[in-house]
Length: 345
Ligand SMILES: Nc1ncnc2c1ncn2[C@@H]1O[C@H](COP(=O)(O)OP(=O)(O)OP(=O)(O)O)[C@@H](O)[C@H]1O
Ligand code: SF4
Ligand SMILES: [Mg+2]
Image (cartoon, rainbow, N blue to C red):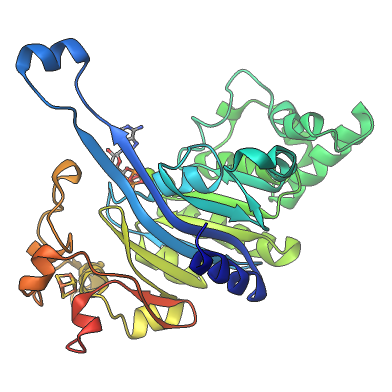
């Protein structure tokens, strides 16, 4: 690790940062099978889903990653919980490097402290298990209670904590509504007493009427249990409601990070401007209006220089050839844009 990176991480620790991503990258090999390539005389094809992604998540706070479909949100989430190995860069949680081979003991101890909640609450629950057994599984795996009676009591407590009844433990997942199933997923995530939960689009599969109930529950639990969240969402209203700090992704690169109010009130990056302008809003007739924002380029063949240049109204020649560096503009505030660096934006 370079001196600069070490210094950066020391600063992060001083700011009471729980999770740090540094220069995180992930490339997927999306080539056709070898024989097809030989017959069709094709080269191997690589897709960069995340590139040089750097951000910090403060303890007890919510950091949200926003971006259009395919911008790399889930890929980054999977690296941050240790499910997917990065091609480059590092993730540290409470000072433990998730992927360094010499730190197996630290990584094992961390497994209990990090949990993940997924978009589809039905697919992530085993339909053949009773809800009580689903929630008890992490308690047993991490040996958090002494005997079967204590496990049952803890499961009942968790069900009540997420707004269900202890008796619901004897039912199967299909007997619950979508919102209730997401509550079960939250109870299961809480069962191992985690400090950090990664939530990948936790409410986007739910009806609008129940979305806010689940978001409120997540906020209440955060306050009660001092949880730290990484929230993944493409919905700017969800992010505004939930996040303390926000990172905006475009084609695998983090283009801007900022505390919530600064991002919504005074965005710096042209892409953030475009996202905020395109967010559905009510017009005089109560309908939603959306501005046209152009097409997202092919992630296998990303534009040169700043990936956003074909859609950016402020692009100049430099933008077409040179990738913008990450500029630190203030505490938690960064932007990667030549226009900002040159003082013209
Ligand atoms: N295992 C994989 N193999 C090949 N390509 C992948 C893999 N996982 C993701 N990708 C590609 O990486 C890019 C980023 O995907 P990712 O799922 O991280 O995006 P996302 O921002 O979560 O999108 P969405 O909002 O649709 O969930 C996409 O182009 C996707 O096709
Ligand atoms: S670097 Fe250039 S093209 Fe990219 S967002 Fe900034 S001004 Fe636009
Ligand atoms: Mg995703």
